[in-house]
Length: 339
Image 1 (spheres, helix red, strand yellow):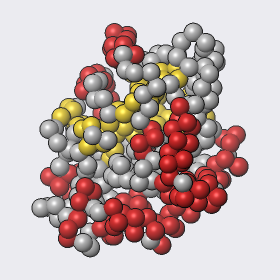
Image 2 (cartoon, helix red, strand yellow):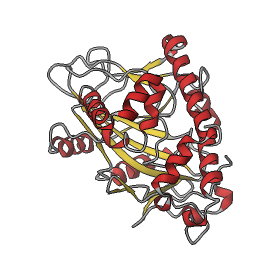
Image 3 (spheres, one colour):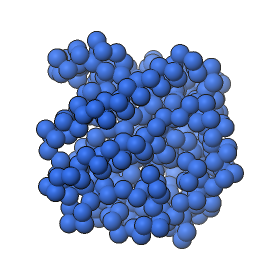
Image 4 (spheres, helix red, strand yellow):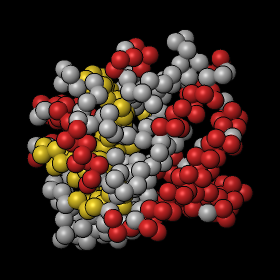
């Protein structure tokens, strides 16, 4: 994140886990977002879709559970759905209804001042809603997955509560600062490029890896490869460290309705239980990725919905929307970060 955030903001992020932007969404826009997601079906939950192609991650919770999930995939799918249903009343990915409105408001309030890097990919948005009966999300990191394919260890989360998150309501997010423990991720981009670039059938006309051209059996071979298994062992180790030895080092952030907070979802985080019996906990999130100098093109669809098709230019203060995923091969090398 040192190459992503300007120094003062990096220091704030590094020591606390957060960057307080001092920017809030207009009340009318907050209510517009809430009204849109209220119309969606109760129980809408997109999280279980990410389990497919990422079943190997179950091994991070223990060899027994991983083996069970491998042997009984249908039962595993039901277990995963049940887990997320107990946590969220609604979890909605990729609506894109408010990405431009929110980002234009942020940029009009000098949001670009936080960043060193010229370009930020606006990948997708998320809405999370839960009532007081749901269990809170425990300590975890949002591990890279093959549905996004392109992810980094320095993802920037725009986090906007749609209701006050405080001592009375609960629901506050807590983060383990990078100064305490960092989760490596960029090495995975290196491995993906090294492994899949060897087969010309995986490449597009610009010589970049096209994730949609990779065959299932080749992806499975990569998952079983020694370098990837070593990464998974590393993830398992740091997850264990975070839960056993750093549980008291998380910083909790109190946020008012509509206030914009920045943090990194690759760092360990957890949510406090929700206490308000009359209103749901609601959060709107936009995920930004820095662009690295790697020959991996971006996927255009996430579970059938467009994503990766907005780009923030921090020099001009603009957000640009594309018909397809941003063509990273056309971004000059000097504006990409080194892995």
